[in-house]
Image 1 (cartoon, rainbow, N blue to C red):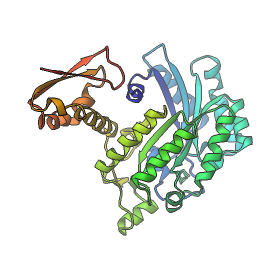
Image 2 (spheres, protein in one colour; image 1 turned 90 degrees about the vertical axis):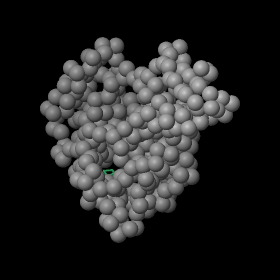
Image 3 (cartoon, rainbow, N blue to C red; image 1 turned 60 degrees about the horizontal axis):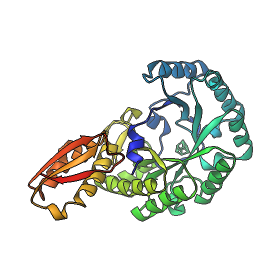
Image 4 (cartoon, rainbow, N blue to C red; image 1 turned 180 degrees about the vertical axis):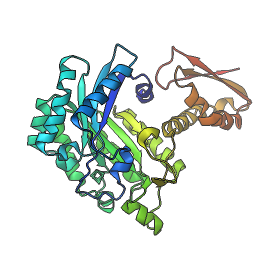
Length: 343
Ligand code: SF4
């Protein structure tokens, strides 16, 4: 298993430039885009340059690869000349070798040959599509305004044109189920995505979902459910060699419980919870022969905290079945492999 390794050993930096689509014509039930991105205005051109320079100055590692990422809205929904203006701004950074790639996120129905030609001519490397689900029932109930078929067509066109494809998904949307989410993950693998992000659906103030939540028409996943679903999705992505670059929203993304965030499985250490759950399953699966003895688990460097569990909970769980448990870190074991030894 190497997906956790990817999470942790990144020498790769991303410079996020948030471009909220203030006039987005869609009304996805879960979205209040300006609250999610934590920004309320579109950065002007000088701000974009400032953002890139500030990030470049803050990077410690000299041996690095850097992408500028236009996130936060539907980049290719902007008029072509505005897309071009943003892309032109970062060309000098590409020419000087300070950045190596450009990525952007958009909707599947905003992909067409004209847009792809433009992005290709400005050396965009990765296009991330907000797929959210490959279940049309879920897309419809969530008011996404596009179908799974449209996402498939966009994904194929992106790959045919030579871009790297990212497909983002959400879990716990209206009408979603574990089975439906697993299906979405398998389609993401089959369509050739190289990366994905998994976003548990949150109830954000002033959205349709908020209204449905108040009326009892929508219940978000519990944190436990979201963690459980995500552990299973990660296994599919790991097997399919799709890099999981995000699970859950980042704490810096401007959501505060009781303010913008009304309900849902938000946790600032969501990824840690998921990795801890994966480690607990792995460690428990090998202790049936050594129950009630003392055991040492030898864990790859960088994985110790996840193996011991969030707040040490895995250790406590294992102590229900073992007399004693010790964790040791090793640089010789990679990925999520581990060794077990009686002590
Ligand atoms: S999530 Fe939906 S409503 Fe929000 S910006 Fe994207 S397309 Fe528009």
